[in-house]
Image (cartoon, rainbow, N blue to C red; front, side, top):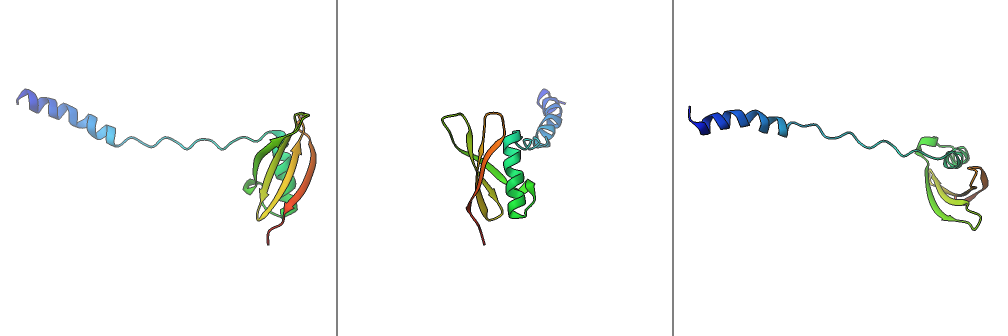
Length: 98
C-alpha cells in the first residue's frame, strides 16, 4: 500500500466521525424573577390560560427603580409594575382579546 493509501484509510474514520456529530442541545428556558413570575401568574389567572404560555417583557422603568412589564396571556395584554423588592405594586388590563 502506498503512503497516500495509508493516509486515506486513516483519515476516513475521522471524516465520518466529524460528519456524524450531534447538534448541541437547545439553550435552557429563561428564568423569571420572583416579580416576573408573580406578573405571569396574575395574567394567567385573569386570562384563564396556563402560566407557561404567558410572556413577560420589560417595557420601561420608573424613577423609583421599579420595572414596568408588558404581559401577554392568550389574546390579552396587561401592564404589571414590579418594585425593587420584587413585589407587584400595580397590575391592569391593557387590551382584552376576543
